[in-house]
Image (cartoon, rainbow, N blue to C red; front, side, top):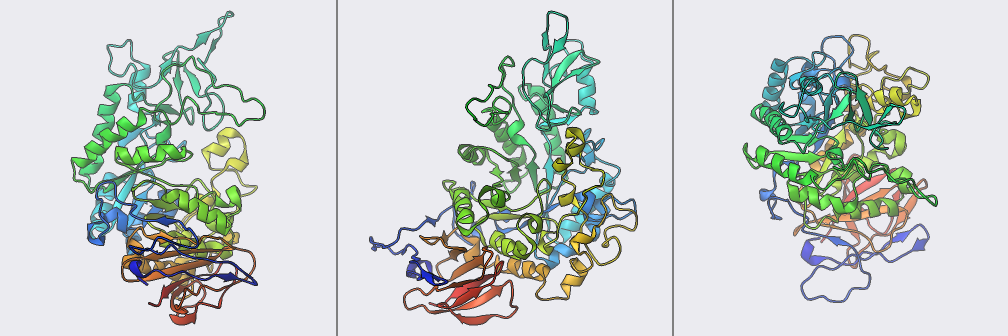
Amino acid sequence: MGKDTKQKLGFCESNKCACLMFLVVVGAIAAVVCVTLLVEDIRDIYDHGENNSSLKWWQKTIIYQIYPRSFQDSDGDGIGDLKGIISRLDYFEYIHVDTIWLSPFFESPMKDFGYDVSNYTAIAKVFGTMEDFDELMKQAKKRGIRVIIDFVPNHSSTEHEWFNRSRHAKDDKDPFWDFYVWNDGITLANGTRVPPNNWESVFGGSAWKLDSIRNTFYYHAFLTSQADLNYRNPFVLEKIGEVIRFWMNKGVDGLRIDAIPHLFEAKDTSLNVPKPVNGEEPDTYKYTKNQPEIFNVVKQWRKIVNEFGPDRFLLAETFGIPKEERPKYYEAGSVPFYFKLIGAKNQCGATAACLQGIIQEGLDISGSWPNFVIGNHDNLRIADSMGQKYADAMNLMLLTLPGTPTTYYGEELGMKGGDYKGLPSQDPFAITSGNPNNSRDSERNPMQWNNSINAGFTSGKPWLPITTNTDYENVNVESMKTDNTSSLNLYRRLAEIRQLPAFRTTNIMFPDKVGKVLVYERYDDQTSYLIVINVDSSPQRLDLRAGDITTGVRIFSTKYVTEERIELGNIFLQPGEGVIIRMDD
Protein backbone atom coordinates (compact mmCIF):
# COMPACT_ATOMS: atom_id res chain seq x y z
CA MET A 1 0.00 0.00 0.00
CA GLY A 2 1.84 3.08 -1.22
CA LYS A 3 2.00 6.55 0.23
CA ASP A 4 -0.62 7.86 -2.15
CA THR A 5 -3.12 5.06 -1.58
CA LYS A 6 -3.54 5.12 2.21
CA GLN A 7 -6.75 3.73 3.62
CA LYS A 8 -8.15 3.67 7.13
CA LEU A 9 -7.20 0.67 9.21
CA GLY A 10 -9.72 -1.00 11.45
CA PHE A 11 -8.46 -2.23 14.81
CA CYS A 12 -10.02 -4.58 17.37
CA GLU A 13 -8.09 -5.64 20.44
CA SER A 14 -9.38 -8.69 22.30
CA ASN A 15 -13.12 -8.12 22.82
CA LYS A 16 -12.86 -4.39 22.99
CA CYS A 17 -12.80 -2.72 19.59
CA ALA A 18 -11.57 0.77 18.91
CA CYS A 19 -11.17 2.66 15.69
CA LEU A 20 -7.62 2.82 14.38
CA MET A 21 -7.35 5.10 11.38
CA PHE A 22 -4.28 6.33 9.63
CA LEU A 23 -4.12 9.75 8.08
CA VAL A 24 -5.00 9.51 4.41
CA VAL A 25 -2.19 11.10 2.49
CA VAL A 26 -3.77 12.18 -0.76
CA GLY A 27 -3.72 15.60 -2.28
CA ALA A 28 -7.35 16.69 -2.11
CA ILE A 29 -8.70 14.81 0.91
CA ALA A 30 -9.42 17.30 3.69
CA ALA A 31 -11.60 15.32 6.06
CA VAL A 32 -10.46 12.48 8.23
CA VAL A 33 -12.34 10.78 10.98
CA CYS A 34 -9.45 10.16 13.35
CA VAL A 35 -6.51 12.54 13.54
CA THR A 36 -3.23 10.66 13.68
CA LEU A 37 0.39 11.52 13.96
CA LEU A 38 2.25 11.60 10.69
CA VAL A 39 5.96 12.12 10.90
CA GLU A 40 7.40 12.80 7.49
CA ASP A 41 10.34 14.52 5.90
CA ILE A 42 12.66 14.03 8.87
CA ARG A 43 15.81 14.54 6.91
CA ASP A 44 19.54 14.67 6.93
CA ILE A 45 21.08 17.79 8.44
CA TYR A 46 23.40 17.93 5.45
CA ASP A 47 21.25 16.52 2.65
CA HIS A 48 17.57 17.40 2.52
CA GLY A 49 16.50 14.66 0.17
CA GLU A 50 14.03 11.79 0.59
CA ASN A 51 15.64 9.83 -2.23
CA ASN A 52 17.31 6.75 -0.80
CA SER A 53 20.25 7.22 -3.16
CA SER A 54 21.05 10.58 -1.54
CA LEU A 55 21.27 9.24 2.00
CA LYS A 56 24.60 9.38 3.79
CA TRP A 57 26.24 6.12 4.87
CA TRP A 58 25.36 6.78 8.51
CA GLN A 59 21.68 7.12 7.63
CA LYS A 60 21.61 3.66 6.09
CA THR A 61 23.65 1.78 8.66
CA ILE A 62 23.23 0.03 11.98
CA ILE A 63 25.79 1.24 14.52
CA TYR A 64 27.13 -1.55 16.74
CA GLN A 65 28.78 -0.50 20.00
CA ILE A 66 31.79 -2.52 21.09
CA TYR A 67 33.09 -2.28 24.63
CA PRO A 68 36.63 -3.47 23.80
CA ARG A 69 37.40 -4.77 27.29
CA SER A 70 34.53 -7.27 26.99
CA PHE A 71 34.30 -8.18 23.31
CA GLN A 72 37.14 -10.62 22.51
CA ASP A 73 40.46 -11.34 24.18
CA SER A 74 43.26 -12.47 21.87
CA ASP A 75 46.16 -12.99 24.28
CA GLY A 76 44.68 -14.79 27.28
CA ASP A 77 44.96 -11.95 29.80
CA GLY A 78 41.20 -11.94 30.30
CA ILE A 79 40.68 -8.48 28.80
CA GLY A 80 39.34 -7.86 25.30
CA ASP A 81 41.64 -6.10 22.83
CA LEU A 82 41.99 -4.75 19.30
CA LYS A 83 43.34 -8.00 17.88
CA GLY A 84 40.31 -9.72 19.35
CA ILE A 85 38.02 -7.31 17.51
CA ILE A 86 39.92 -7.93 14.27
CA SER A 87 39.38 -11.67 14.69
CA ARG A 88 35.61 -11.10 14.89
CA LEU A 89 35.10 -8.69 11.97
CA ASP A 90 33.51 -11.39 9.82
CA TYR A 91 30.75 -11.62 12.42
CA PHE A 92 29.50 -8.18 11.40
CA GLU A 93 29.17 -9.32 7.82
CA TYR A 94 27.05 -12.20 9.08
CA ILE A 95 24.63 -9.95 10.97
CA HIS A 96 24.61 -7.30 8.22
CA VAL A 97 26.13 -4.58 10.37
CA ASP A 98 28.53 -2.25 8.61
CA THR A 99 29.44 0.28 11.29
CA ILE A 100 31.20 -0.41 14.59
CA TRP A 101 31.72 2.09 17.38
CA LEU A 102 34.63 1.44 19.73
CA SER A 103 34.42 2.60 23.32
CA PRO A 104 37.73 4.08 24.59
CA PHE A 105 40.94 2.18 23.92
CA PHE A 106 43.34 5.09 24.52
CA GLU A 107 46.27 5.19 26.92
CA SER A 108 44.80 5.45 30.39
CA PRO A 109 45.37 4.53 34.04
CA MET A 110 41.94 2.84 33.73
CA LYS A 111 40.41 4.46 36.80
CA ASP A 112 37.28 4.83 34.67
CA PHE A 113 38.09 2.07 32.17
CA GLY A 114 39.47 4.37 29.48
CA TYR A 115 37.25 7.41 29.97
CA ASP A 116 40.22 8.87 31.85
CA VAL A 117 42.59 9.45 28.95
CA SER A 118 46.28 10.06 29.65
CA ASN A 119 47.30 10.21 25.99
CA TYR A 120 44.69 10.85 23.29
CA THR A 121 46.89 9.62 20.45
CA ALA A 122 48.26 6.40 21.96
CA ILE A 123 46.74 2.97 22.55
CA ALA A 124 46.47 1.49 26.05
CA LYS A 125 48.84 -1.48 26.22
CA VAL A 126 46.07 -3.70 27.55
CA PHE A 127 44.24 -3.19 24.22
CA GLY A 128 47.26 -3.48 21.94
CA THR A 129 49.35 -1.14 19.82
CA MET A 130 48.87 1.54 17.20
CA GLU A 131 49.89 -1.08 14.64
CA ASP A 132 46.96 -3.18 15.85
CA PHE A 133 44.62 -0.23 15.36
CA ASP A 134 45.97 0.37 11.87
CA GLU A 135 45.39 -3.29 11.04
CA LEU A 136 41.87 -3.06 12.44
CA MET A 137 41.15 -0.12 10.16
CA LYS A 138 42.63 -1.96 7.19
CA GLN A 139 40.62 -5.11 7.78
CA ALA A 140 37.42 -3.21 8.52
CA LYS A 141 37.70 -1.19 5.31
CA LYS A 142 38.41 -4.38 3.39
CA ARG A 143 35.01 -5.65 4.54
CA GLY A 144 33.19 -2.38 3.97
CA ILE A 145 32.85 -1.73 7.71
CA ARG A 146 32.89 1.87 8.95
CA VAL A 147 34.62 2.67 12.25
CA ILE A 148 33.49 5.26 14.80
CA ILE A 149 35.64 5.84 17.87
CA ASP A 150 34.91 7.36 21.24
CA PHE A 151 36.16 10.92 21.73
CA VAL A 152 36.47 12.05 25.36
CA PRO A 153 36.96 15.82 25.22
CA ASN A 154 35.39 17.00 28.49
CA HIS A 155 38.21 15.85 30.73
CA SER A 156 41.54 14.10 30.76
CA SER A 157 43.20 11.90 33.30
CA THR A 158 45.19 13.77 35.94
CA GLU A 159 48.07 11.61 34.69
CA HIS A 160 47.99 13.31 31.29
CA GLU A 161 51.06 15.38 30.38
CA TRP A 162 48.76 18.38 29.91
CA PHE A 163 47.60 18.24 33.52
CA ASN A 164 51.14 17.80 34.77
CA ARG A 165 52.24 20.89 32.87
CA SER A 166 49.23 22.85 34.06
CA ARG A 167 49.68 22.03 37.74
CA HIS A 168 53.36 23.09 37.48
CA ALA A 169 52.71 26.29 35.49
CA LYS A 170 54.06 29.35 37.30
CA ASP A 171 51.90 32.08 35.79
CA ASP A 172 49.62 32.97 32.89
CA LYS A 173 52.59 33.35 30.55
CA ASP A 174 52.62 29.57 30.39
CA PRO A 175 50.00 28.40 27.81
CA PHE A 176 49.07 25.54 30.15
CA TRP A 177 48.32 27.90 33.06
CA ASP A 178 44.54 27.76 32.58
CA PHE A 179 44.37 24.60 30.47
CA TYR A 180 42.10 23.13 33.15
CA VAL A 181 39.43 24.77 35.30
CA TRP A 182 41.39 26.06 38.29
CA ASN A 183 40.09 28.10 41.22
CA ASP A 184 41.68 29.38 44.44
CA GLY A 185 38.55 28.57 46.39
CA ILE A 186 37.56 30.31 49.59
CA THR A 187 39.73 30.76 52.68
CA LEU A 188 37.70 30.67 55.88
CA ALA A 189 38.45 32.81 58.92
CA ASN A 190 40.30 29.90 60.51
CA GLY A 191 42.51 29.58 57.44
CA THR A 192 40.81 26.49 56.03
CA ARG A 193 40.62 26.31 52.23
CA VAL A 194 37.24 25.21 50.85
CA PRO A 195 35.85 24.91 47.30
CA PRO A 196 34.42 28.05 45.67
CA ASN A 197 30.87 26.68 45.52
CA ASN A 198 28.63 23.68 46.15
CA TRP A 199 28.86 22.14 42.67
CA GLU A 200 28.68 18.35 42.76
CA SER A 201 30.43 15.63 40.77
CA VAL A 202 28.30 13.20 38.79
CA PHE A 203 29.98 10.45 40.81
CA GLY A 204 29.12 12.10 44.12
CA GLY A 205 30.70 14.64 46.44
CA SER A 206 32.25 17.99 45.64
CA ALA A 207 33.30 18.63 42.05
CA TRP A 208 36.41 20.43 43.31
CA LYS A 209 39.67 18.94 44.53
CA LEU A 210 42.60 20.79 46.04
CA ASP A 211 45.75 19.93 44.09
CA SER A 212 48.69 19.38 46.41
CA ILE A 213 51.25 20.65 43.88
CA ARG A 214 49.61 23.82 42.57
CA ASN A 215 47.77 24.39 45.87
CA THR A 216 44.66 25.32 43.90
CA PHE A 217 41.33 23.60 43.35
CA TYR A 218 40.59 21.99 40.01
CA TYR A 219 37.12 21.12 38.74
CA HIS A 220 36.14 17.52 37.91
CA ALA A 221 32.65 16.71 36.66
CA PHE A 222 33.31 13.01 37.23
CA LEU A 223 36.10 11.28 39.19
CA THR A 224 38.78 13.29 40.98
CA SER A 225 41.22 11.64 38.55
CA GLN A 226 39.35 13.21 35.61
CA ALA A 227 40.14 16.93 35.47
CA ASP A 228 37.90 19.06 33.23
CA LEU A 229 39.53 20.91 30.36
CA ASN A 230 38.95 24.67 30.10
CA TYR A 231 37.30 25.28 26.75
CA ARG A 232 37.38 29.04 27.24
CA ASN A 233 41.12 28.73 26.58
CA PRO A 234 41.83 28.77 22.79
CA PHE A 235 44.92 26.64 23.40
CA VAL A 236 42.70 23.80 24.60
CA LEU A 237 40.69 24.00 21.39
CA GLU A 238 43.91 23.95 19.41
CA LYS A 239 45.27 20.85 21.14
CA ILE A 240 41.96 18.99 20.97
CA GLY A 241 41.74 19.92 17.29
CA GLU A 242 45.10 18.20 16.78
CA VAL A 243 43.68 15.07 18.39
CA ILE A 244 40.68 15.08 16.04
CA ARG A 245 42.92 15.50 12.99
CA PHE A 246 45.15 12.67 14.18
CA TRP A 247 42.29 10.17 14.18
CA MET A 248 40.74 11.53 11.00
CA ASN A 249 44.10 10.94 9.32
CA LYS A 250 43.93 7.37 10.62
CA GLY A 251 40.78 6.97 8.55
CA VAL A 252 38.10 6.80 11.24
CA ASP A 253 34.65 7.57 9.88
CA GLY A 254 33.26 9.37 12.87
CA LEU A 255 33.50 10.35 16.50
CA ARG A 256 31.09 9.64 19.32
CA ILE A 257 31.54 12.67 21.59
CA ASP A 258 31.44 11.62 25.23
CA ALA A 259 29.74 13.62 28.01
CA ILE A 260 29.38 16.71 25.86
CA PRO A 261 26.67 18.42 27.97
CA HIS A 262 29.38 18.85 30.66
CA LEU A 263 31.82 20.66 28.36
CA PHE A 264 31.38 24.07 30.03
CA GLU A 265 30.61 25.33 33.51
CA ALA A 266 29.25 28.73 34.46
CA LYS A 267 32.00 31.32 34.29
CA ASP A 268 30.92 32.84 37.60
CA THR A 269 32.13 30.32 40.17
CA SER A 270 30.52 32.24 43.04
CA LEU A 271 27.17 30.79 42.02
CA ASN A 272 25.80 28.09 44.27
CA VAL A 273 23.13 25.61 43.25
CA PRO A 274 19.95 26.62 45.13
CA LYS A 275 18.62 24.20 47.69
CA PRO A 276 15.30 22.68 46.58
CA VAL A 277 12.15 23.90 48.30
CA ASN A 278 8.67 22.44 48.69
CA GLY A 279 9.76 18.99 47.57
CA GLU A 280 11.25 20.19 44.26
CA GLU A 281 13.83 18.08 42.48
CA PRO A 282 17.31 19.56 43.01
CA ASP A 283 18.81 21.17 39.91
CA THR A 284 22.19 19.66 40.73
CA TYR A 285 23.92 20.58 37.48
CA LYS A 286 22.33 23.98 36.94
CA TYR A 287 25.73 25.62 36.45
CA THR A 288 27.76 22.69 35.19
CA LYS A 289 25.73 21.24 32.34
CA ASN A 290 24.05 22.36 29.10
CA GLN A 291 25.84 25.70 28.96
CA PRO A 292 25.30 27.73 25.73
CA GLU A 293 28.97 27.83 24.69
CA ILE A 294 28.91 24.10 23.86
CA PHE A 295 27.50 24.57 20.38
CA ASN A 296 30.20 26.91 19.10
CA VAL A 297 32.78 24.27 20.02
CA VAL A 298 30.82 21.55 18.24
CA LYS A 299 30.70 23.79 15.15
CA GLN A 300 34.48 24.09 15.28
CA TRP A 301 34.83 20.32 15.49
CA ARG A 302 32.41 19.93 12.59
CA LYS A 303 34.61 22.28 10.57
CA ILE A 304 37.68 20.18 11.39
CA VAL A 305 36.16 16.85 10.37
CA ASN A 306 34.85 18.46 7.19
CA GLU A 307 38.47 19.00 6.20
CA PHE A 308 38.47 15.25 5.60
CA GLY A 309 35.22 15.15 3.65
CA PRO A 310 31.53 15.81 4.36
CA ASP A 311 30.85 12.15 5.17
CA ARG A 312 32.64 12.17 8.52
CA PHE A 313 30.12 11.69 11.31
CA LEU A 314 29.74 13.34 14.72
CA LEU A 315 27.51 11.56 17.22
CA ALA A 316 26.92 13.35 20.52
CA GLU A 317 26.28 11.63 23.84
CA THR A 318 23.58 13.92 25.19
CA PHE A 319 22.13 12.01 28.12
CA GLY A 320 19.68 14.03 30.17
CA ILE A 321 19.51 17.12 28.00
CA PRO A 322 16.28 19.15 27.79
CA LYS A 323 14.18 18.57 24.68
CA GLU A 324 14.85 22.12 23.45
CA GLU A 325 18.60 21.45 23.38
CA ARG A 326 18.41 18.67 20.76
CA PRO A 327 17.94 20.94 17.69
CA LYS A 328 21.01 22.94 18.71
CA TYR A 329 23.23 19.87 18.40
CA TYR A 330 21.86 19.20 14.91
CA GLU A 331 22.41 22.82 13.93
CA ALA A 332 26.00 22.63 15.17
CA GLY A 333 26.68 19.69 12.85
CA SER A 334 26.28 16.64 15.08
CA VAL A 335 23.59 14.05 15.70
CA PRO A 336 22.55 13.86 19.36
CA PHE A 337 21.76 10.44 20.78
CA TYR A 338 18.12 9.97 21.76
CA PHE A 339 18.22 7.86 24.91
CA LYS A 340 14.67 7.80 26.27
CA LEU A 341 13.84 4.29 25.07
CA ILE A 342 16.55 3.00 27.41
CA GLY A 343 14.59 4.06 30.47
CA ALA A 344 11.11 3.27 29.15
CA LYS A 345 10.43 0.56 31.72
CA ASN A 346 11.16 2.84 34.66
CA GLN A 347 9.64 5.95 33.07
CA CYS A 348 6.24 4.58 32.18
CA GLY A 349 6.20 0.82 32.28
CA ALA A 350 7.18 0.36 28.61
CA THR A 351 3.53 -0.01 27.65
CA ALA A 352 2.45 0.52 24.05
CA ALA A 353 1.28 4.05 24.85
CA CYS A 354 4.53 4.76 26.70
CA LEU A 355 6.72 3.53 23.83
CA GLN A 356 4.68 5.34 21.20
CA GLY A 357 4.97 8.60 23.12
CA ILE A 358 8.74 8.26 23.50
CA ILE A 359 9.14 7.43 19.81
CA GLN A 360 6.98 10.38 18.77
CA GLU A 361 9.08 12.70 20.88
CA GLY A 362 12.23 11.23 19.33
CA LEU A 363 10.85 12.04 15.88
CA ASP A 364 9.86 15.60 16.78
CA ILE A 365 13.09 17.16 15.51
CA SER A 366 12.02 19.61 12.80
CA GLY A 367 13.46 17.98 9.71
CA SER A 368 16.61 16.44 11.22
CA TRP A 369 17.63 12.80 11.03
CA PRO A 370 16.44 10.66 13.98
CA ASN A 371 18.26 7.97 15.89
CA PHE A 372 17.27 5.46 18.54
CA VAL A 373 19.14 3.33 21.06
CA ILE A 374 17.86 0.81 23.59
CA GLY A 375 21.01 -0.19 25.47
CA ASN A 376 24.60 0.78 26.24
CA HIS A 377 27.49 0.30 28.65
CA ASP A 378 25.86 2.38 31.40
CA ASN A 379 22.45 0.71 31.55
CA LEU A 380 20.97 -2.73 32.16
CA ARG A 381 20.75 -5.04 29.18
CA ILE A 382 17.34 -5.25 27.51
CA ALA A 383 16.81 -8.85 28.66
CA ASP A 384 17.23 -7.59 32.24
CA SER A 385 15.36 -4.28 32.07
CA MET A 386 12.45 -5.47 29.91
CA GLY A 387 12.55 -9.21 30.50
CA GLN A 388 14.05 -11.99 28.38
CA LYS A 389 10.89 -12.69 26.38
CA TYR A 390 10.73 -9.07 25.20
CA ALA A 391 14.32 -8.85 23.94
CA ASP A 392 13.49 -9.89 20.36
CA ALA A 393 10.49 -7.55 20.33
CA MET A 394 12.67 -4.62 21.35
CA ASN A 395 15.16 -5.39 18.58
CA LEU A 396 12.24 -5.56 16.15
CA MET A 397 11.16 -2.11 17.29
CA LEU A 398 14.68 -0.64 17.19
CA LEU A 399 15.47 -1.86 13.69
CA THR A 400 12.15 -0.79 12.14
CA LEU A 401 12.00 2.77 13.45
CA PRO A 402 13.06 5.66 11.22
CA GLY A 403 16.63 6.91 11.40
CA THR A 404 19.85 5.30 12.62
CA PRO A 405 19.70 2.57 15.29
CA THR A 406 22.52 1.70 17.69
CA THR A 407 22.89 -1.82 19.06
CA TYR A 408 25.00 -2.58 22.13
CA TYR A 409 27.13 -5.72 21.76
CA GLY A 410 25.33 -8.90 22.77
CA GLU A 411 21.83 -7.41 22.52
CA GLU A 412 21.40 -9.19 19.19
CA LEU A 413 21.63 -12.45 21.16
CA GLY A 414 19.12 -11.36 23.78
CA MET A 415 22.07 -11.69 26.15
CA LYS A 416 21.52 -11.08 29.86
CA GLY A 417 23.93 -9.13 32.02
CA GLY A 418 26.21 -10.93 34.45
CA ASP A 419 25.05 -11.64 37.99
CA TYR A 420 27.81 -10.17 40.15
CA LYS A 421 25.91 -9.70 43.39
CA GLY A 422 28.21 -10.43 46.31
CA LEU A 423 31.35 -10.04 44.21
CA PRO A 424 33.69 -7.04 44.49
CA SER A 425 32.66 -4.40 41.95
CA GLN A 426 35.03 -3.52 39.13
CA ASP A 427 33.14 -0.33 38.25
CA PRO A 428 34.86 2.87 39.51
CA PHE A 429 31.46 4.54 40.03
CA ALA A 430 30.40 1.85 42.50
CA ILE A 431 33.81 1.86 44.19
CA THR A 432 33.99 5.64 44.53
CA SER A 433 30.43 6.04 45.73
CA GLY A 434 30.71 3.08 48.09
CA ASN A 435 27.39 1.87 46.72
CA PRO A 436 27.39 -1.50 44.92
CA ASN A 437 23.98 -0.62 43.44
CA ASN A 438 25.79 1.92 41.25
CA SER A 439 27.83 -0.82 39.58
CA ARG A 440 27.61 -1.12 35.81
CA ASP A 441 29.52 -4.40 35.74
CA SER A 442 26.44 -6.42 34.78
CA GLU A 443 25.93 -4.80 31.38
CA ARG A 444 29.65 -4.90 30.65
CA ASN A 445 29.88 -8.69 30.89
CA PRO A 446 31.93 -10.57 28.28
CA MET A 447 30.47 -11.35 24.86
CA GLN A 448 29.24 -14.93 24.53
CA TRP A 449 30.73 -16.57 21.43
CA ASN A 450 30.32 -20.28 22.18
CA ASN A 451 29.43 -22.70 24.97
CA SER A 452 32.95 -23.23 26.29
CA ILE A 453 33.75 -22.43 29.90
CA ASN A 454 34.53 -18.76 29.21
CA ALA A 455 32.03 -18.49 26.36
CA GLY A 456 34.85 -18.19 23.82
CA PHE A 457 35.78 -14.75 25.14
CA THR A 458 39.18 -15.65 26.54
CA SER A 459 41.51 -18.57 27.15
CA GLY A 460 42.46 -17.01 30.48
CA LYS A 461 40.55 -15.69 33.48
CA PRO A 462 38.01 -13.09 32.27
CA TRP A 463 38.08 -9.68 33.93
CA LEU A 464 34.40 -10.27 34.70
CA PRO A 465 33.28 -13.89 35.08
CA ILE A 466 30.79 -15.58 32.78
CA THR A 467 27.86 -16.24 35.10
CA THR A 468 25.33 -19.05 34.80
CA ASN A 469 22.31 -16.73 34.81
CA THR A 470 23.23 -15.71 31.25
CA ASP A 471 22.61 -19.27 29.99
CA TYR A 472 25.76 -18.84 27.93
CA GLU A 473 25.76 -22.52 26.96
CA ASN A 474 22.73 -21.79 24.77
CA VAL A 475 22.82 -18.02 24.36
CA ASN A 476 25.95 -17.68 22.28
CA VAL A 477 26.84 -16.91 18.67
CA GLU A 478 27.98 -20.39 17.65
CA SER A 479 24.89 -22.18 18.97
CA MET A 480 22.45 -19.57 17.72
CA LYS A 481 23.81 -19.56 14.19
CA THR A 482 22.41 -23.05 13.68
CA ASP A 483 18.89 -22.13 14.88
CA ASN A 484 16.77 -20.19 12.40
CA THR A 485 14.46 -19.01 15.20
CA SER A 486 17.26 -17.79 17.49
CA SER A 487 17.51 -14.17 18.57
CA LEU A 488 20.70 -13.85 16.52
CA ASN A 489 19.10 -14.98 13.27
CA LEU A 490 15.99 -12.91 13.92
CA TYR A 491 18.25 -9.88 14.30
CA ARG A 492 20.08 -10.81 11.11
CA ARG A 493 16.77 -10.99 9.23
CA LEU A 494 15.70 -7.62 10.62
CA ALA A 495 18.99 -6.10 9.44
CA GLU A 496 18.13 -7.37 5.94
CA ILE A 497 14.61 -5.94 6.11
CA ARG A 498 16.02 -2.55 7.08
CA GLN A 499 17.53 -2.37 3.60
CA LEU A 500 14.08 -2.30 1.98
CA PRO A 501 13.26 1.16 0.54
CA ALA A 502 10.32 1.84 2.89
CA PHE A 503 12.57 1.47 5.93
CA ARG A 504 15.07 3.94 4.55
CA THR A 505 12.54 6.72 4.47
CA THR A 506 11.40 8.63 7.54
CA ASN A 507 7.73 7.90 6.82
CA ILE A 508 5.86 6.55 9.82
CA MET A 509 2.28 6.62 11.03
CA PHE A 510 0.74 5.66 14.34
CA PRO A 511 -2.80 4.77 15.37
CA ASP A 512 -5.05 7.44 16.79
CA LYS A 513 -5.90 5.27 19.78
CA VAL A 514 -3.33 3.09 21.48
CA GLY A 515 -4.18 -0.21 23.09
CA LYS A 516 -1.87 -2.75 24.62
CA VAL A 517 -0.05 -3.49 21.37
CA LEU A 518 2.49 -1.20 19.75
CA VAL A 519 1.46 -0.63 16.12
CA TYR A 520 2.95 1.62 13.46
CA GLU A 521 3.26 1.74 9.69
CA ARG A 522 6.38 2.27 7.59
CA TYR A 523 5.97 2.99 3.90
CA ASP A 524 7.23 4.51 0.69
CA ASP A 525 5.46 5.25 -2.61
CA GLN A 526 5.27 1.56 -3.48
CA THR A 527 4.90 -0.53 -0.36
CA SER A 528 3.49 -0.33 3.14
CA TYR A 529 4.42 -2.41 6.19
CA LEU A 530 2.69 -2.81 9.52
CA ILE A 531 4.85 -3.40 12.58
CA VAL A 532 2.85 -5.01 15.37
CA ILE A 533 4.48 -5.78 18.75
CA ASN A 534 2.78 -7.15 21.83
CA VAL A 535 4.55 -5.44 24.73
CA ASP A 536 1.82 -6.46 27.16
CA SER A 537 2.05 -9.32 29.65
CA SER A 538 -1.01 -11.11 28.25
CA PRO A 539 -1.92 -12.48 24.80
CA GLN A 540 -3.66 -10.02 22.46
CA ARG A 541 -5.95 -10.44 19.45
CA LEU A 542 -6.23 -7.63 16.91
CA ASP A 543 -8.24 -6.63 13.87
CA LEU A 544 -6.11 -4.56 11.50
CA ARG A 545 -8.31 -4.60 8.42
CA ALA A 546 -8.23 -1.38 6.43
CA GLY A 547 -11.27 -0.86 4.23
CA ASP A 548 -11.11 -3.51 1.53
CA ILE A 549 -7.60 -4.55 2.56
CA THR A 550 -8.14 -7.69 4.59
CA THR A 551 -4.96 -9.67 4.02
CA GLY A 552 -1.23 -9.16 4.06
CA VAL A 553 2.00 -11.14 4.00
CA ARG A 554 3.78 -11.69 7.28
CA ILE A 555 7.40 -11.21 6.20
CA PHE A 556 8.87 -11.39 9.69
CA SER A 557 7.88 -12.88 13.01
CA THR A 558 9.68 -13.35 16.29
CA LYS A 559 8.02 -16.78 16.39
CA TYR A 560 7.77 -18.12 12.81
CA VAL A 561 10.47 -18.51 10.20
CA THR A 562 8.57 -18.67 6.92
CA GLU A 563 6.61 -15.92 5.20
CA GLU A 564 2.86 -16.44 5.18
CA ARG A 565 -0.25 -14.70 3.93
CA ILE A 566 -2.46 -13.88 6.90
CA GLU A 567 -5.90 -12.47 7.65
CA LEU A 568 -5.60 -8.98 9.08
CA GLY A 569 -8.86 -9.36 10.95
CA ASN A 570 -7.54 -12.03 13.27
CA ILE A 571 -3.98 -11.39 14.44
CA PHE A 572 -3.05 -13.15 17.64
CA LEU A 573 0.18 -12.36 19.49
CA GLN A 574 1.68 -13.83 22.63
CA PRO A 575 3.49 -11.51 25.08
CA GLY A 576 6.78 -10.38 23.53
CA GLU A 577 5.75 -11.53 20.05
CA GLY A 578 6.03 -9.20 17.10
CA VAL A 579 5.45 -9.29 13.34
CA ILE A 580 6.04 -7.26 10.20
CA ILE A 581 3.21 -7.45 7.67
CA ARG A 582 3.51 -6.30 4.06
CA MET A 583 0.13 -4.84 3.24
CA ASP A 584 -1.67 -5.89 0.07
CA ASP A 585 -2.65 -3.11 -2.33
